[in-house]
Amino acid sequence: MPRRPAAALATSGEVLRLIRAGEAVTRADIGRVTGLSRPAVSLRVTELLDHGLVVEDSEGPSTGGRPPTRLVFNAAGGVVLVASLGASRAQIAVCDLAGKRLDGVSLAVDVEEGPDTVLPLVMDTWAELLGDRPLSQVRGVGLGVPATVEFAAGRTESARIMANWTGVAIPPIIAERFPVPVFLDNDVNVIAIGEHRAAYAGDADDLLFIKVSTRIGAGVIAGGEILRGALGAAGEIGHIPVRDGGGVLCRCGNVDCVDSVASGTAILRDLRDRGYQVASLTDVVGLVRAGDAETMAVVRNAARMLGEVVATAVNLLNPAVVVLGGDVAEAFQPLVSGVREVVHRRSTALSTRNLRIERSRLGPGAGIVGCAHMVLDHILSPEAVDAAL
Ligand SMILES: [Zn+2]
Image (cartoon, rainbow, N blue to C red; front, side, top):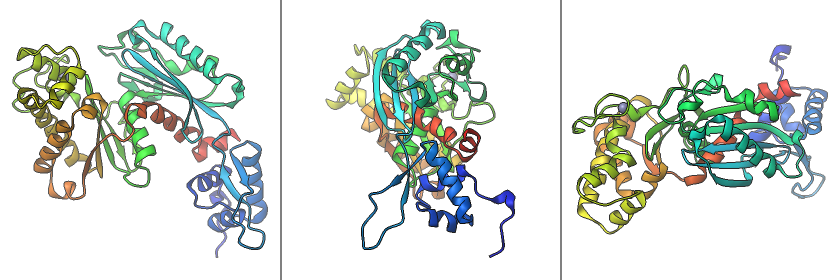
């Protein structure tokens, strides 16, 4: 075998990646996969052991003779602090390095009170949740917010909600108290990451997540990675117009955006226009369960229009799976079946040949899981691990 040039030698970060992926879990395997010499493997493994990122598993299978020591990624070697902010509630949690929630709370938080009020509250809650764990255990912070985010800058864009957060760079504020890498993204991207890593990893690396709630948004996973676009605005499907929407003026100023005709807000409005006294989606769920014909017609109409937009996205992206989440999609099976029907009729044959259209598997916990994985993807990447060691 030709010697690999020195520049191509696997680093400690790459060795960690192999161990995490289960591609090489003994020193001999690592040597074989990377071509590193025994001393070089030993040096890298020792570094990872010293930093608590890897542990030796003594409980190897005893099939006669002494088995080689297995190396295992140490999910308990640190924690990440995460918060998924909604318009009126925040889920705040501490997760381990595998993205598992260790502790968490759900609080009533009015995001419109602005960053000066909300961020200290979130940080105080993290401090409480950390309890006796030393601050040095904290390896990263992740937040999901209900607004468009300029990802690299960690700040929200001008929007109807969270208007008083506009332009505020959030990572430096958090890093003052928790001096670790801080990542911020919009809530839909975060959930898409959570669904992919926790429910579809190794199964579907091209995934389109659609959140149908008071608003409609999408998160795109392409080739296993979130697609953010040039500045972070990818996936804003809510303002794609539909045909035959009825001329509804959208809050963005255009007419018949899918957000204005098929969101939870639109379903409630359409039912009220028909004389129904529905206060919330819970009331609509009751009507759907009871099989109320007019309610079903409104939900099916929303499904038809949402399906049109999803069909266009499917043609453009050719995902393996479309995941429909958010409280509206989770509550209304007829919406999911309606979207499925339209997409199969209107998308190209090849793009729908193996396409699955499913409801969210993670449900309301997806935001927290996604925030944790957004952070872990960065801090456990080979480059970040090498920089930290
Ligand atoms: Zn619009």
